[in-house]
Length: 165
Length: 421
View: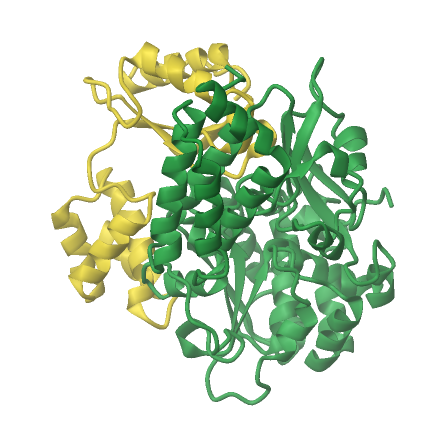
């Protein structure tokens, strides 16, 4: 199914097409990686809704990115439960290893590093979301293993089975 | 009560599949509800059970349902609040990931009671696995005739749709969630009208939390008296407690409503980490006021926690030990609320920004002698003056931190540094 068909399918779930803007933006972001202006306009046109409605959602909700992000978006939770279990040290470690600050993207485009609000997985704090996956009970060694795994995945090297996956 | 009710399936292999759910007696409560009860009887049953909303506010569920007009020329909607953004809370995620059919059955019975044919589950977008499992479970339930038209031969049609959130804590506020579902920025609505009268698409709408809805099949199966017999009479039932932070065994615990907080932290979750002492506990997500160690004998139910100036909230229990700086915790919590403020009202949008700046300089050792007074004044300006509970929660939490740990704030200001560094 192409983007248009997926958006139409989503729109069918609501009595009002405006409700489908959020699902449509998620679909479009999956397709394009981020949501530049022309993509927002395309979403508005497919749904037949005001462009401003689409813009305002794309800039209000934090999961939408109007700027490009790296192939792997490292989203470390640093809210209270993760902070209490050492999230700060993990952030500092990743900043040092990747050579970027919070919010930055590595020059090879592989990693973007962000901190996020509570991911709702505090039982495995500190926790980080990368793409669709949660990685919990993190420490420096596990972060290093994960980054190594992602680097190889990003460079197309065949992957060995990941321990604990 | 050591029996697990709400979590009985979460450790069953492939417990998220309909075969496992049916093997454990799943969907029998729905069959019983449709065969033996009218919708009004279900509402009465839930009223009699004294079930109170598990999202945080503790409003009586049966009463909420009874506000939906019986005659309406518009469709009625059921919305499940699965936005679960309250820091320290993860119970709904675990239910959706590991036992999604329990939620679907709860929704089907609730929809039958209020006369809704459509439900939306508003799941926060980060919960990718939960979303996938729910969608799969909905398809399975359709194939088996638990969803769809003329469900189990009864005059009842019902469909569930999953709506993915996209990152906004405010969506947990039920009217902001409705705006979000309508494709708008999530901002709370003025009430009245209440959602039961004019909610989603201005139609009668009931919004219930995941944990609230999963209580419903058990009340139908086992009766209101059984439910009311667990924990305090005015705040009864099995309860999910999310324990996290500086504690030996963080995790999700199902225990009766009303157990002492100390028992939960020390006995069930194993107490403080090696060589440390518990200093304070946040009992209900970061919106709930912190309780110092000396207050841990409080019981974990809506009324007992309200009586000590805190709240059960989402039962996100965050344990803080004696190595941790309370100013740092308070600063992080205010930073969260400042970040998540929707911007609709000034006391919250501007006030929290100001509070955050003052706290940050205190934590950095650059606080001024009158900063505590300044913070109290700001809390006064915010509390009771905001559009929704977000700003209130932030102000109440900070006031509690100042009341119990003022000496830590003062030490930062006097010593021009954080004593914990």
